[in-house]
Image (cartoon, rainbow, N blue to C red; front, side):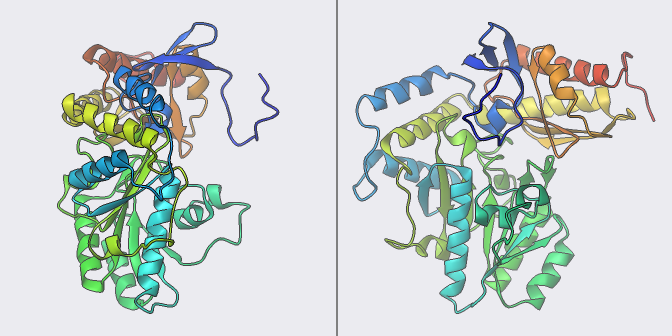
Length: 400
C-alpha cells in the first residue's frame, strides 16, 4: 500500500478503513476492529454517530460557511454554551487544538506587552505537547517534535510537572513571566496528571504575580475524564482554556476560551480564522454538546473509567512487564517496562486498534458511548494482548 502523493508524516499501519459504527471500524476487506483510541480522543461519541451525522447533513444543505465579518447565530450559540459549561466570558472559535493553543499564546504575549513586559515569557511543563505549529512546538519541550525546526521561538521556559516549589521559585525570581500553561493531564507524554494541589498552587501563584493560567484541554476535554474539562475536578479555574478534538467528534473545530482580563485582550484585527466557527462546524459542535449532556456521558465516562482502571490494575499491576496503570475517566495509560510498539500490529491482527505513546505507554481513549458489554470486551482484549506480547499465559501475571 503506497501513498506517494501524501507527504510522509505518519508511520501508517497497513489497513484502510471505509466505515465506522460506535466503537468499531471496518476496513476495505470487511474486517472489524475495536477502536480503543478514537482517532486520539476525537470520536468520543462513537464513529458515524447518527445524531451528529444528521446535524451535519441538514446544516450542509442550508449553509456551510460565511465570513466571520458577519454575525453567525450558530457561532454565538456555541460560544454561549461553551462559556456556560466552563465559567469563561468569551470564546475564539477555530479549527484545531494547535490553533486554539496559538490563540492562547498570542493572548498571553499581548497581555504581557500591554503591561510593558518587553520579553513576555510563558512557563510550560517538561514533556508537554501543545501542537505542531512553530509556537506550539516551541512551547512543548518535546525534542521529538522540535528536532529539525530550530531556531525555535523564544519566550518559553519549562519546569517539572507537579514540582510546585520549583515553579514558586521561578515566579519569584523573574519579572518577565506572563502565563503558566499546562495540560492538566499530559496525553502524548503518557497520561501524567497534574495533581489537584498543583493546579490549585498554579492558580494561587497566578493570582499573586498577575499571571494568566492556561489549561490545554485539547485531549482531556469534552467529558472524557468525568468532568466536562479535567480542571473542573478542582476549584482552580484558569484564565484561558483550550479545547478541540472531541468537540466536533471528527469534524474540525476548536475553541480558545477566556475570562477576566484575558478575555479583553484580542480586538478586531488582532487575530482571526477564515473557517473558525463557521455554521457547519458550530452545528456539529453544538450537537456533540447536546448529545453529551442528554446521554449523561460525562458521568458515564467517570464510572466506566473507574471500572476499567480497577480491572486493569487487578490483572496487570505487579507483573514485571507492567510499570504502572494510571488515568482519570476514559483517559488511561498502561506503562510497560520496555518500549512496546510491537504490541500494535499484534493487537491489529486480533481486531483491536491500540495506540502506544512515549515509546512504552498504551494509551486508551475509547468512546464515551461504549456499552457495558463493549467495556468488558475492551478490558479482556487489552489484558489478553498484553499477556500474549509478554508471553505470559497465567491467569495472574508473573511478578517481579
